[in-house]
Amino acid sequence: MADITPEMCVGGREISEPRLTSDGSFVVYGVLDRSADQSASYLVVHSLSDELADEILATEPPLRPGRGLGGGAWCFTADETAVVYAGTGGDLWLQSIHGGESRQLTDYGSDRSVSSPCCTPDELSVVYMLDQAAIHQSFFDGGGDQRVDDGSADFCFDPFVDSTSIRWQAWNVPDMPWDHSRVERRVEGGEVADLLVAGSVQQPRVLPDGRSICIRDDDGWLNIWIAGWPAIVEPFEHASPTWGPGQRSYAWSPDGSRIAFTRNERGFGRLCVMDVDSREQPMEVARGVHGQLSWAGGRLACIRSGARTLPEIVVYDTTTWERTVVAVGGSPGWAAVDLVEPELIEVESAGGTIHARLYRAGNGVDRGLIVWLHGGPTDQWQVSFMPRIAYWCAQGWNILVPDHRGSSGHGREYQQALRGEWGVLDVHDTVSVAEHAQSMGWGTPERTVVMGGSSGGFTALGAVAARPSLFAAAVVLYPVTDLLDLAERSHRYERHYTDSLIGPLPAALDVYRERSPILHADQFAATPLLILHGDADPVVPVEQSSVFAERVRAAGGDVELHVYEGEGHGFRQRANQLDEYGRIAGFLARHVPLAFE
Image (cartoon, rainbow, N blue to C red):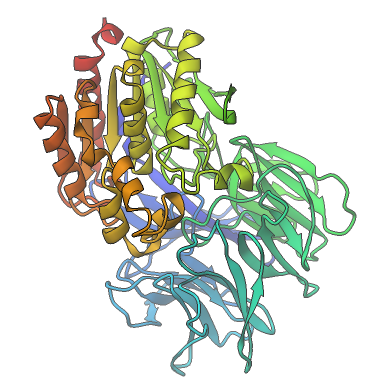
């Protein structure tokens, strides 16, 4: 089998947002191609009915594609002769499906954010999301632009247009959308109406027969609801948290009689189909994490991925449910690699059951254990293709991915358990999982490393402070170290996130100070730390890492800090991504020497 190289992990194509034409004869999807020195983004038109070559629908300015299973980058016009897309310069553009010059529809510029276009059935306009805070409507004939929402919501996401109304997801701070959100709706010529729900709601749409459909968690799990009632009640999530626009985790058949949906089975994914009105158990179609579902003309298109499956655009025949692969993302060379499927791990602790997944080391080498923490903290790494995990697993590391309390994918109670307890319960669960792993022989304290980015970095540092004897070293990327600074200076989307995770200020001031690593530098003096951060990070200011590193060094600690110029919250430049792999490898070789003998 071939080796996995860092170059394989950072290069290649990212594919996104497949949509079928209404007759199911074509599927169009987005591509971000990083295989060359200069990245390029565009739409691809693929014929499913004839032996026609793929056509690249080049757009100028370039398409700003969605990432992963997110979207909001483009849509068809009602007659499907053109697409409306979000350009890299920050505006919406109209582009004929046959190519040619594009036409600018909005004029905001790069300091604004326009996304989630949805064209009206009358072919006269497009509705879109502006700055995640407002819903607007732009008319194709030059009739101007108007605001649709009434300004009562702090955030507005994912507008959907039917023949009579426009509806969207909305919420107000200090809530995040998974805490409490609602559907707002405006009927033509009428006022905005709130359709309130008790918990979280997302992806509001309308079935062909006029009934409303969405995903909500009133019964404790994010399940599909139709006309105000659960269409199915099961202890699995049918969607992920609203971290960005354009999620499409379900789709209905052209006649509205069946619904395809994604199911999260403790981190493992599955595609299912159910009859809308029969209430029978859903049919399980295929394993794998699916997303961006589109159903038309006897076909279902979507993105599919797994631990051993690169992201791919697939099309299912909705009669036989046979699957055809249309396009594959990633870099060349992965087909020759033997990838690892994880095992489900459940650890019993005083707080209940903690869920995790274990990737056992490949190549017959055992260098130790990496406890790798997801960000969010309201998030989860489902079992999809993750080059970083594949790379380090191939280097001989067992990789344990915990879903500490506060993670999504395990129901509302599990996710909401972290309210007011960030820095406590997540740290407790991480320590418990690490102790269990070492008791099972997957690693020893001298050969266990904890890693995490953003909030995962915060939790990793908390675990090191709580039980330094469990970990030989820690690697943290753009970590939260100063909770007060985060509450004041983080970007707009998460500015009030700490109100629920820690508590409202100034009442909880002492708690913020108690849980901020930057104020307790002496607790990290015994554990070598590697910190990587971008100097343009809008979420966690880079100054947090700079000051934290200085204070830990002053306390006698061993800290390596590297700041990447021009990088934000996560590293996008190929050279920096490659450097990240090299720096982590060098750090581990220096501080976990037994693992490299």
